[in-house]
Image (cartoon, rainbow over all chains, first blue to last red):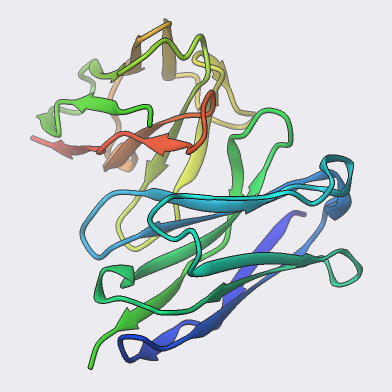
Length: 121
Length: 107
């Protein structure tokens, strides 16, 4: 059974940093890209970035809204992905979802339960 | 960026009604549209890929079609458990983008 579990959210001050984790199981991790999607309270979904698989040379890609501030990394040995967030802004307040991406197709077939990040002073 | 415009933003229908949502893209995205269902307080659930292909296990009352810039999503007979917000997503161009969502309620 495929499982995606995201964690690490919390309250952080503007300008601060936070690291989210995504632990997976139940599928061949090395075959998949993994993406992050966020959802501000009461609003819609925003794709923020992805880490591609080894076959795609672990390339990372980001939305303009987070590029230069957020970094996605992966550890294939732990079947895990990480989202390092720096220079956080109030507008980054959202539920963050880690999602499995069907590599080559770029649709999100399994989602984590979400972890809430609140940026506030 | 490829903009996706969903309409309506919300709708109210009776159990058994046919419900249709549209998703219009700002440029040609071939058949690269996927659809998700999100119930309150839950993560989105993947329903349909490549414009019209039903994910395994998704009830057959859900369907979708379209290509190019115009896409539709249909629930053939609305059920109480279908109350949710539905999103389209394009996977043709980076950054991947979502429509604004359609909230479906029971009348």
